[in-house]
Length: 203
Image (tube, rainbow, N blue to C red):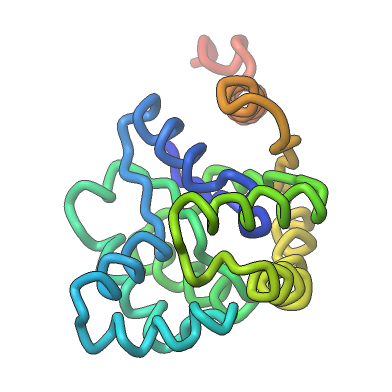
C-alpha cells in the first residue's frame, strides 16, 4: 500500500510524475493544483477566490486547502493509497495531514522530492506560458512562486528527512528517466522496510 507525498518546486514535473506513478501503483494522484484550476474554469466561488492567489503566485489559504484534501482522502478510491501532489506545502499543513492520517489509522509510506535548477524551472514555465496561455506562468509570477516555495515549502524537506521518509530524486531529464528513478527509490524503500527473510519464517 503506497501513501506518498511528492515534493518539488513549481515546474519540477510533479504533476506528470504523480500521474505516471499513480497508474503504476493503482492509486489516485491527488493534485490540489488540478482541483483549483478546474474550479477556476467552472467559475465557482472557490475558483474565483483561488484565482486571485494563483495569478499573484501565492498559495490558496490553508483553511480552504485543508478541508479540500481531508474530503478527498476520505473518498473510497483513496483508502488503499494515494499520491499527494502539491500538498502539504507548509509545516502547518504537515501537522494537518498527520492528523488526517492518524484519524484514519494510517501513515505515509514515503516522501519523494524532485530537485531541479531554478533557472531551468523558470525557462520551462515561461515556455509553457507561451504555448498554453496560462496567466500563472508569466516570468514575474514564476519567480515569485519559486521564492514562495523556498520560504514556505522547503522546510518540509527537513521535517520529513528527520522522520526518515524523504527521498530526493533528480527531476531533470526525460520523463521516462525521472519515472524510473522514482520507481527505483520506492523499490529500495520497500526493501528496506521489509522484514528479514529469517523473521518471516520464525515461529
